[in-house]
Image 1 (spheres, rainbow, N blue to C red):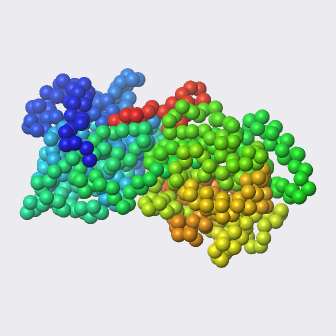
Image 2: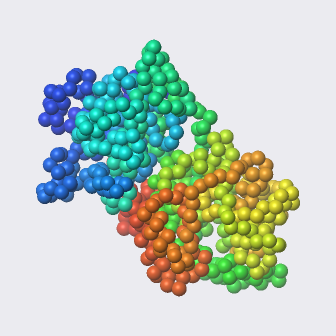
Image 3: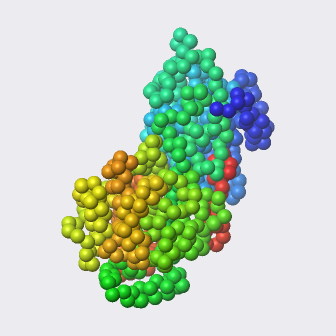
Length: 598
């Protein structure tokens, strides 16, 4: 909680006067009582005002607005089979749309001097604002003004939304004590539309015997004195945004500002491993090492241990970073582990990203150069300044919709892992095994030796939730296997999948991990149904994470490249701040046009 003084009053007044035309301000003065006249200061959080004639044109009128006028900011989109109006925002993200809706509601209530407080602990990730039921008339009038200036929607759920400027809508909702408010946003391509699922809930708390009673349960407090004292807290407490952004302050109660047992109070980083397989210098070194394997006791390489498909880069990392920026605003820092390479489009100056060379993390420099992902993964816990809790992703793993820390980590720090239906084959590892099967067998042997249980399932190709301390412990407990894996320059029958399997089973057996559940899909580009599965994924966008992989070289690599390029650009059209501005990558606006500042 911060002081009771309003830290944003002057900004609201200034923005109100600069954004709201004089004619509109005079109309407001005539229509509403003095306490409500400042309500339109909520324009602070909205895009430029859109005039009525422009709205008519966007809905089928003939007048064409100027290219850079406010008219160009409205777009008709289709949501749930129905047409709706959305503000066109370059750089739109799910988290920014949600924070924007909260900011609009708070700004409107604050400007109109209406009593309110933000609520935590309700089910779901949406922000929530409470007002006493006795203020409902004023609240509805203020919101109708805001909806009239900037088209938005109100309803009882994401599936039942209606125009917020309509008197009929409010009459229909008279007895509803929990409303969903949303000002829709879309990106310029129209592929991303953030509507009611990114809205803000408004609760009307009933006043009785000097108490305010919540209309639905929450996990903090559902009854408070009507004569209560509120304070200010960051809006990010109620609607998460990345660390580089701020959204101002909002009123709340001390109970809702205090840390909760369900809060993830520890930082969470992300680690990527990446290689540019088209780099001629890197390929020359790889080929020389591969062709120079003359050790008498070195097993022959399996055909999938060093084939070109393992190193093919289609800039998947660019799109995986877009997905991360779009759907996981709670990540603190990104560490990109490479063999001295840097993607041409990467914004290496971004404070939330650091490129890490293999030479910084390998405990034995003689193990380099390496072309074995298992070897690289064995050294991740040596990354300087890496958080204790982090997600490890390959560049072909993507977030498909908004995700929360709780899907990967318990609030007490325990990790979660996601077992696949695919089984580890029986028997001991041998040179004829697929590298992934040999590694699984080796992991099984270590767990059986240490804990007496026999593991049988592989892991899904999802982000892996890891703890630095557990990886450090594994390096000590399984020193020999760890050393062998580190020194395998290509995938070997002796490898152990430390980050993608052994960590999870070891942490589980030592009471530091649990089995989790995540909605996930794996798409092999070599599958003849790959195009159909990509189309379905694009149409529904209903998976938390997905992996797009190619295990063998395609018969028609150009067609395969076009297929995946079209999919990724359509699914993730919004550039991230981790991309450079210029010909190779368009720069994403840092504020997203959503009332945020960085």
